[in-house]
Length: 97
Image: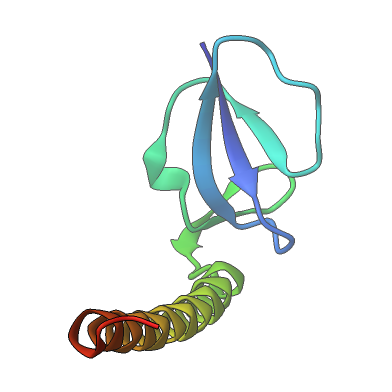
């Protein structure tokens, strides 16, 4: 098994990925000898990992934006559902077209 630390644009490890085959070298993947989840939120300094941890604010902001979009889509679906229910009630109770 091959283990990689996935880095964001600030060289902060955002996840540990495992593959059955060796992956092509990339700037955002740093090969590790072992699966070490404690590297998540640590910064790669070029030759070693930082001792302190960093919050991945980029991912946090992306998730917040996605959450707002999902809430908006849910509200639209609820509105459509209410309109469909009203139309169906009108058809059933009103005797149709």
